[in-house]
Image 1: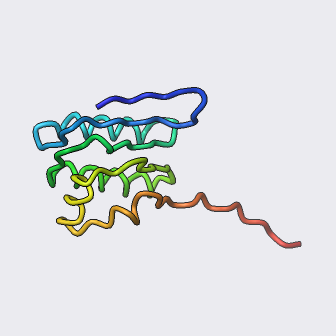
Image 2: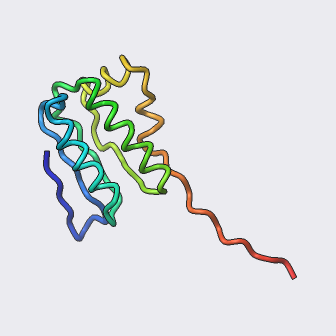
Amino acid sequence: MTTEHTDESPGSILTFGQSLSISGTGALQSVLVEAIDGPHDVVMDLSEVEQCDTASAQLIFAALQTAAKRGKRIRLAAISPAVTSTFAFLGLPLDQMAERRTPNPEPEHNAA
């Protein structure tokens, strides 16, 4: 699992390896928390994931929800069949959560 940020792109890119399993959920959680708390929007590249267990899928789903509540954007750049399958098995709406975020409220203007 790697994280990179480039000046050309105003966001952090999280790239994941071949396996997302319960043995790595502590590290996964740390990376996701750091990304959500960071100053940049986040892109999750899941294209190389060949194994994704339910614990990892639930962590990713929770990160998407948390980011949306904070008005932060997490975009899924590529979703492997393994990730799609695990989300489907759990009944989690991956496609709906990928781009969802809470808009920042507009300031109120008083009419005179």
